[in-house]
Image 1 (spheres, rainbow, N blue to C red):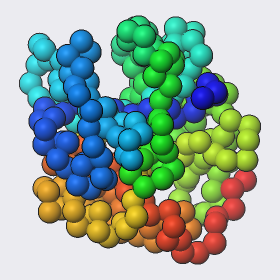
Image 2 (image 1 turned 90 degrees about the vertical axis):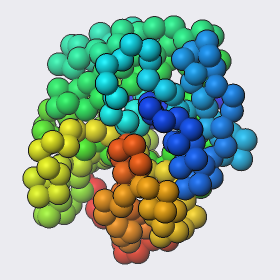
Image 3 (image 1 turned 90 degrees about the horizontal axis):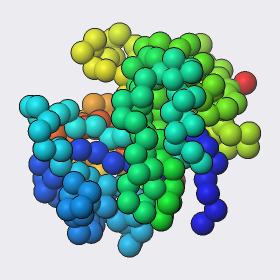
Length: 266
């Protein structure tokens, strides 16, 4: 597989206090199976759909105080994690975890943008990232949810060289980023005060593909998850936002079921 361009969403993982519970939940809702945990790397456990790697789950590291909030972390491709970390600092972001080698798999670092959004950087080695995406049970899309769009927009375009376009909608401030091609790679949504209480931090909302959005929501609720909004029809697909039983937000989307015309982006 050719290396993905810098700034391409390339991988995702999440930390769960109850890893077995997370495996049961996502196995049912998204149809994932799981490989053997890697004790050498903190019991990191990859998730698969149809035998292809789509995500990973991991327990908290020893010595972490309390129970850390579960959340999905999106990693962006980089040819040089150390150089990207310097660009992050230069653009006003914060490096939370310095670039580190992960065996022969690659190198990673964790960072936060000036508006408070946490994300990861992945420099591929043997592990090149998603083996399946844009399909049922795999990563489909991501939106940066922020209360400070000007800061987020400036940061992500500076660090990754994105181009951007804004949706022509007087009721919504939504922007998409691209890497120079016709297809966008990331979205940005403003967190409104009425929809997002002050205690909800900025984050990146991941969308996973499903065959049937309504059935995925039913499965999530049956297993202790909570629907935040939806299912909702859109030109992009029928989607819903969910909190899993351990509090990690994510969304599901049936990309085959579209309603309405695609909005104009300028």
